[in-house]
Length: 320
Length: 77
Image (tube, rainbow over all chains, first blue to last red; front, top):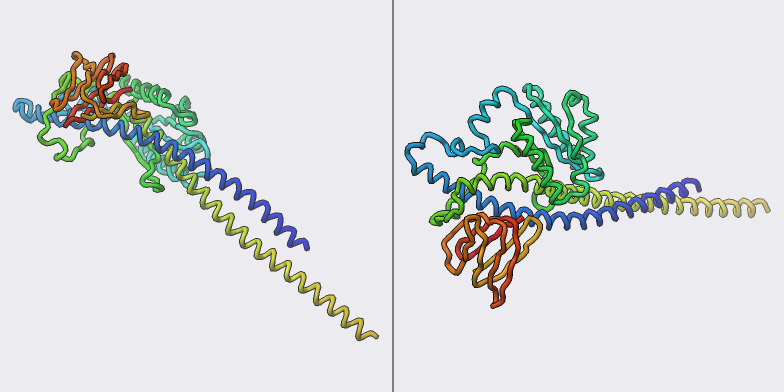
């Protein structure tokens, strides 16, 4: 008797758990859709900006190619922009590297291995940097990332910047812009020589990749283009292409952080949706099994009672 | 000719147009059919144009315009 009661309690508790996980799944699905559209808009915008950057870059490269006197210099050394990696920056680099790691996690858990994998990668990366005698600061974004930095003993000596933990809880464009401007300013003021962002990014509909991106200094070499796209088109530039480039670089940097944060939020909700779908499925499996056990014990009890009654009746008849 | 005005959050305008005037950083300029490819920064001003025989206008604070092959893309903030 007591066993069936126990099983019923378990069935009830797991049913209510299932209800919760299903509700969370629905919520994440809705949020995922919201962030996905935002992220798509943003990426579309950035793609357009990158296109412009590439056109300008190609034009500058052609200009330098055509100018024989300066053919020794790669074009990046010629352009003096504080955000770009150039020779003077490299010289300082050998003295002391001051690296800022921005680690973007989620605020809440229950999203599978979304945070744990990311934070493991961050830990390995930062420890590697520490052993190279770099001067490191960490800027956590998201509660999980913050508590990880606080907990981790090997990061005890590393200063943690706590001002932006809540940046993703109610992310909007202005907030993100303000944040990127602050980071860019501290880079210009030589507070950091490198800024690296570690974050999750959704690939396809469900695969999550951990990205480790050099935010600053900006490497223009990484912007490449398929040649056919540009061939034959001679653009007019207003103002000239170098001025355009100078103005464009801060713009691209400003937007990059917002797109990264949006990407991380999209990935988080996708991860949570998958985790909650799995949890709901598991709950369903357990409920099935428990119901089977319940029915079996119930049946066994009935059989037992029946044999007892029959046995008792037989005994009575034998007594007469 | 196709004009598309976008900001990081949404598409603001996307239509076939017959002409448009853009507030370029080095002076306003008008784009008609088969304009040469151009990339220009825009300064504070108004984007004015005609689409389906109706005029339209947008106030902008800054932006970038790219014209190529009768496609005009304006990126604003």
